[in-house]
Length: 251
Length: 250
Image (cartoon, rainbow over the protein chains, first blue to last red):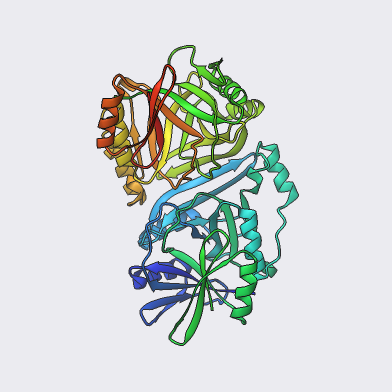
């Protein structure tokens, strides 16, 4: 199985971007050579890694983070003070169901969302790693299998509410979420959205595993493809692509 | 100059789709061979053409229609009864500016938006909206193609966006081209990733007085010609705009 190692940001200025995200999430950061790493002092949240790396320009990033905060409106102002930018606050409503979130950008333009879900914890944390994709249910199942996470059933009552509001069956397959056993965070969220297909991803996800070779074979069978294996500083890592082409690294 | 002749829908079942749009817009549908036309009996809105044609599957359509209606919530219910389906009702807010639209699909899955601005008397097509990479550049191309005025960018709106914390690339993320004298539909351009289907579900057909001269003018402006088709009483050229959206010049 894969375990989430970190979410990696390709940066022009890793120091600046790591400073922003550490302040945003109340993380602690430390330099690692040319790179920076930001970790959750509570030992709960996903680690973030900031590399000096090329990244392609994108219109819609393939992978972004949803940050859960206790008070979205207050957080918006705080994030502007940290050097972030506003894109817009969006609400969507389907029948009686309603959600609001604020789309922002970090100092290098990476989009992310701020949200305050009803069950949000009383501190700031990465709630979701969100993938834009063509087939959310299929891609979600691939990742559940890769991570050894349970396959989520979408609540039948929730689906019926969507149907009653006028959604057709195809629309009901436009999102999917998986989460670590025991309700940990972050979840992986999959939504049907067109995405840019950049040569170099601005944000991607890295994993560790006990047996890279066995994992490689297992994931390839599940629909992933292998890009390359690299050894640097005595660490070997393999870059793969998931069934929709998103690169990820395992070591 | 180009004049918008039709908005053309590639359909599996042109009769069914034209019936839906005819009822949605209070247009009159009529068969034209295997195709259907729906025209505004008031002679105001653009004509819609429904052709039996292949279309590729898309996630985000490159071109869609925004429909203004007197009462968006009531219209949502009516559209569901006509055979449409709901995607979601969306609101966007930036500082004190906000707007709300309901995204729906016609019976063949073509997305469109319903908006209910004040003082709307009846349903009409307000915008032809393009998802694109460079809204100002593409908007400038189309204003020039149609002989519409260059739009001034509303500095007071941009200032409100800046005051709310919006920066680039989002400040240049949208552009509007309008026919002279408040005509419609307007062409709206926003920065969105889009699908790049082999066959577009919706494209635009234009008429012009001198097709050859117009093709040359548009090619110099950044369009490219794909092919010219000659029918018994109609010759038209398929072109692509600078971002690859196909359109026909007849």
